[in-house]
Length: 118
Length: 174
Image 1 (spheres, one colour):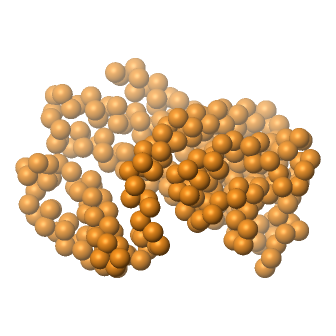
Image 2 (image 1 turned 45 degrees about the vertical axis):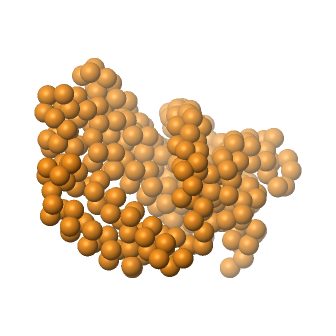
Image 3 (image 1 turned 180 degrees about the horizontal axis):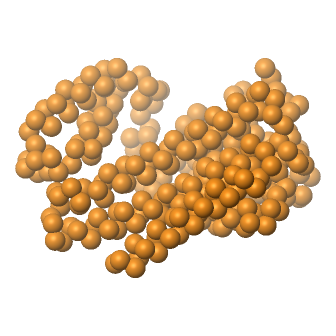
């Protein structure tokens, strides 16, 4: 049980680390959003999964309604909120950036540039 | 219709309250106070938000759609997300990117399925929905590694960008 939890934490931290490195390496706001939002979401899924497994492990000894056991549910709700809000905010930032005239760096194609209706 | 709208949104609010206060007492898992105050809040929230939670039809109450969504999330979406994450890690480390904004026409009929598709595209690393054309329901997607063969014809092939996501979005919320 413990080794699964540790593995998940290591994987989660790895993806969060890669997200932070990508934030520095990529050239413009769009590519940075890829690294900064998506890798951290995937990392957070693993971190929350680790918390849930740890918490499920206490069901046997402490019963279903101790603060440790309820953490399963609360961690899951936190995960649902992350998965719902993360793409929404990433989309909002990208849209605002394009509307205020930020061009994608090194872009091979930009279909949106000619098609703007506003 | 108004009463059903209110009932649906109040039930959703009450269920959410119950989830957040699990294990507060001994009536099943909740205390009496939490149940009462939760019901009061659920009624208030249901009255205020009934037109936002339920827009036009009640089709999303169909349990088959919920099952389809769960199947889509675990069998189609999570594997695609895992593969794409590894791909982005590779691009972060090597720095090999080929970005661009492409336009795809998924031909989805309503807002909910389009939202589902746009969020799926954004959550999958490597693709990020930037803008939507509300007249034709076209999506503009920022793609970190544009493939040459996807650029050949003008309504871009959405298979290359997001696989079978549009078909699933149509099945779940169409």
